[in-house]
Image (cartoon, rainbow, N blue to C red; front, side, top):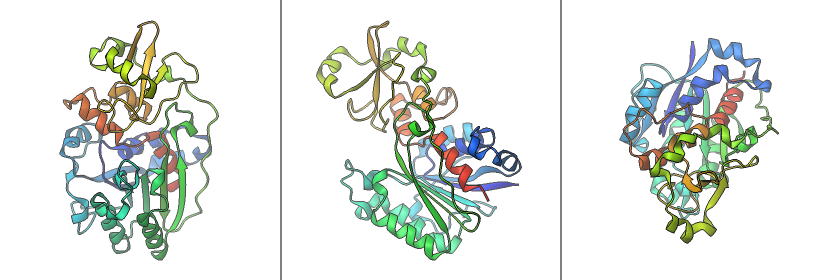
Length: 317
């Protein structure tokens, strides 16, 4: 028996990675769930994304080929699955709610997919729902519509604003999360970790020899005052949020590493960022995707340890 998940806007599979990790996920507040989760492990049984480039990577790591489809055209979420779905996980585009996206909200065409899913909730009534987006999503028209739809459909809801730093991971990536379920006990709070893991746990020293990661000295001179540069050995180092523009935009897209030993400034590798995000070691090592595509995909993905915490409370009876 397992919890059957629809991974909507699936990307490289942050929710699938979390679902695979969760039964062994060590957290004191959720330790009683371990036996239950071993018996009813969450599993993604359908995945949908408009981006064809994610298909082979998703299949390699998660054993499922995502359906390439526009979500706004769906008649049913489960239309390509023979199984009933227990849970939907939604990670809709954040651009309609960000400053860079002009905060057009429901007037942005990229928000049409979420609007369609809100319409489908009362028709399909999945037992469990999770949504992730940027903090600016809270208070938006779609946020209000979704909460009203969930309330009218008999769900209980809980909202969280969490960052990987809350769990001791040295990376800022604050996100808004909404959980909803039919029945069961009320949602608990999530414990905050006071111990920060050192950034060096996530750094591959071999990457200092990768010339494709080095930032040219003239670019450093031009942008240095606006770049977030971290000393690799700093005990309290915490990275900025990595976005899909990392590797393309030199500023406001993530952090850079400086090493006095190598007298060099470089970008984080896609695999290093993926490890910070909680994905398995060498996540991109088997792919033929370009480095630029890897940065774009990981910048659009989920912080897996945060999602593990959320899944653990969502699945609690």
